[in-house]
Image (cartoon, rainbow, N blue to C red):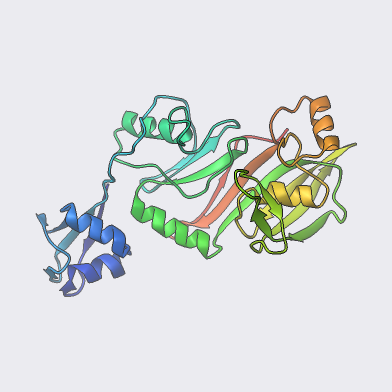
Length: 288
């Protein structure tokens, strides 16, 4: 993948890469040593003097991953030359781990890029637990990944989730303000802890049933397991959650035939970092 720019001023190539193209210093250095920076079709170093009218090209090919591309079905919600949004099913890892190197979303997305002859890498901007399902936002190269991460860090990437929870929260709309920390190793779980990191979740009940309710959840912060920990903390754990559920919620989940946590990444809203257009991606999946 390439980024092209016609110079409207004179200056060093490095200044165009940082200011007009928005490349990070790390990416610029990687492209420099890989000879992937061009001016008028000739490979140049970052200190090259660019003149008005020169064409600057940065080739954003990423190094090959340490895991294989695989052919598998993925549900595409949105795609352009910069980003890919997919629906992740429950039970699928987003990225390979030491224990699991195949059958993940990353493997299948790389397989899709191969089929469609796209020279792209796997850069997840949003990540979901194995059993959480719904929208996952991916950048097609490290430059777009950085721009989207900046949006995320500045709070300009709005994520909305939907869940089925035990009981009905009271009040039906509110904010959970409870710091979260990690339990001692070897546990990977989190807990509410006054000494933890500040964590904030907005919730709103959208539908009530006899023993459970449907809620919309908006994470203001992005701690690991935040929504699951916060709902369990207020006494309304997400149905089907084996780690943070209580005996009552797990018994109800079993009675309802629920075998995985009912938590869905429902919607993602942001300003596209390249086009500047408001972008809203919605899942096709549902918690019911």
